[in-house]
Length: 115
Length: 111
Image: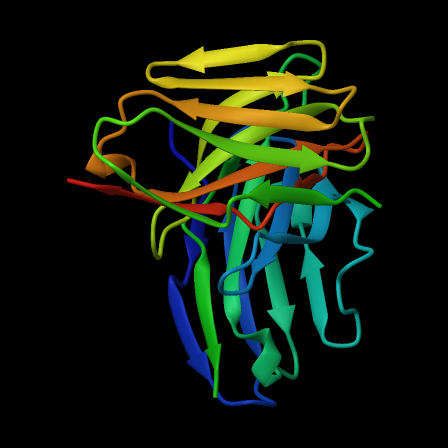
């Protein structure tokens, strides 16, 4: 079974530039998550999709961050404009989310450095 | 708001020791609890998932317990090996299946 795919693996941008990350979840997984992990901290939820609807985006900085999940499969996360404090690893995860199986599986992440 | 705490933040042990990592959470109304492993520069690997109705789960040398009423979970690693060196993260799942993570325990197993 293929895992969660993310690209790119690394990205370096200057502050005020824009950047986009892509995630392809495990086939058939209804729920997709984007997490931000700052060095030395645990991942923090940015947004959660159920199919192509948003379940929770309460911690997403909506003035600069946006995310979409078209057709309930792939997802993109965009930052525009980026700030220095956005430097982090952005993790995508998915889960089957049936009553019997809610285990979350994570991708390798995208390491963003804003200079 | 759910808060998850992991103690200790870092742990260094000699190879062969048995060890326990601790996780506590403030809201006992959880759906499940997951333990993850994270190697430097890598994503998260799921180790064990405990449903809220379960008390423990085992996989090889790993055993995770859950006491929902007291808001605690432990991850027991038997006969530790240098390859076990990584950061271990605990996460609890709420009613909407969102995961709230602790800050992790960085484990170093010395040869």
